[in-house]
Image (tube, rainbow, N blue to C red; front, side, top):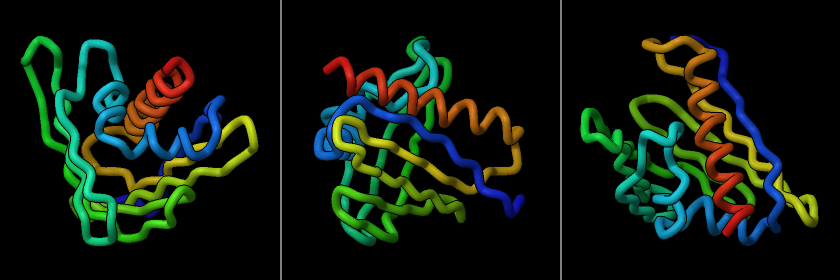
Length: 137
């Protein structure tokens, strides 16, 4: 396992309260949580407390492939940041309020099967999807 973490980020043209809500509320998560338009997120659950779980189903729209993504929260600073773990990997998400914009920074441990570039591009694509959904709804 590599020691170097991967970071992706986006500046969202929305206030921090809306950005946090759209990022953590399952009603919104299902609308943006996929890296490619040929995929979707048919369901999501979020028990946002330390020790609580976040679950999302990610599937190819043609039904050819899908997987369940499940994490356990390790830290939460309401409206500002949270961290979670899955499969021995750690992820942190930070929200910085810049008045009319909110910067979202996601830092995560890479896995060993895919290249760093592929992992970064996939997570960035999901974050870009989040940015587009949040700004247009």
